[in-house]
Image 1 (cartoon, rainbow, N blue to C red):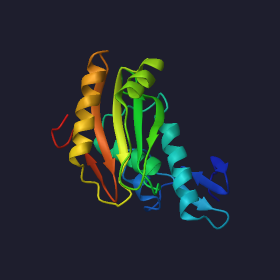
Image 2: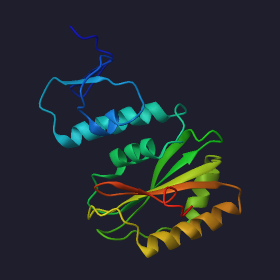
Image 3: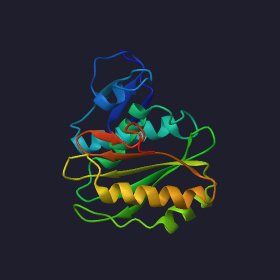
Amino acid sequence: MLPVIKISSGICHSSEPFPVLLRSLAMTHFPRRRYLFSQRAYEHRVLEEAAEILEQRYVRGEAFTRTQNTADYLRCKLAGYEHEVFAVLLLDNQHRLIEFKELFRGTVDAANVYPREVVKEALHVNAAAVIFAHNHPSGDPEPSQADKRITERLKDALSLVDIRVLDHVVVGESCVSFAERGWI
């Protein structure tokens, strides 16, 4: 019998090793856990639970220092939307999560982003650094010219109040990191 650590919404997990079940969790450097489903679990429920598990790992715990872990976390948070959502990871000096905040919602191919609101949210929680993220409902994670322009505007606005921009991750079928491409 497996030792159950947590039970929520019919999904149980244990600390025993397992072959990959939730691919995005298994790709991280975290200890592997076994996930057992006590009832039929629809994909959206599994993804919601995965996002909650990742959230718990990062809340003032693990630092967002590895691009792959950041991408895994953001994929769980943003991949299911059918419209664009722009979000920000508000981080402390050690790049630990203070708060994940969805700031703007748009249409199937665009979301208006206002630098003033981003700065206001970052100052409100006393963030030292941020990581931007948004999804592309089409599945193509390639950043547009508009994505690059707004990232520069946000970087400029946040630099005035000494808040570092560490990355901007675009989530589609895969993820694209501005930092990995040398754009930040």
